[in-house]
Length: 223
Image (cartoon, rainbow, N blue to C red; front, side, top):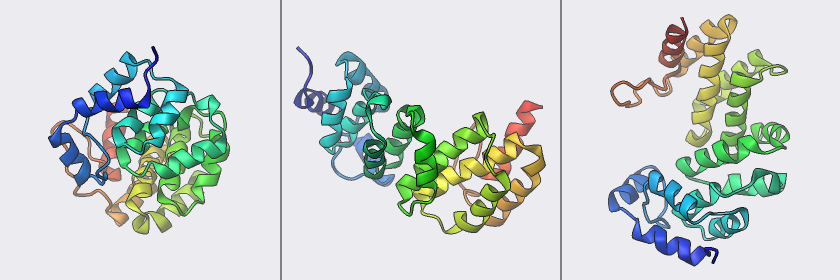
């Protein structure tokens, strides 16, 4: 018998962890969550064979953990551009937005049209998705992108951008500096001038998201 949303919520509730809930709250999540570890989210989705229809029902619950499970069952091609736009605007928590962008948005057939649409959107979560798709293009298919214009926008807008959008704008800044030597010094200079993530705490062995450090470290590894 196929799982239903109630079954999934019950299973997730049993896996909840107060430490994860507290961490999620510190990172901006609301109270509609059980605090399930991401590894367990994956196990639940796999064990219950979550599908697209069930995923839509789970998303509709509004529960953070259920929405993370839902993402793993979505079939991007079954979502219209407007469907996906609605999902992106309602995923107002960084971990949820990043999973949605990685597992669904980046695989949607209409992502380029959505990228252009979201890049000009005042909603910070739509903008986060637009800049994420732009970051993907910088690394994989940059033909047609106006990189100097992107740097102009980042220089002018990133300092005052909402943190939700600022994060993926920074990925674009670093990506341009890493992949395009002709724009490297300007990318580093913009990062230094803005100073965003200069003091970001990182675990031992991890690279800082501060663009000048990130760019220089990745270039060093390539060399």
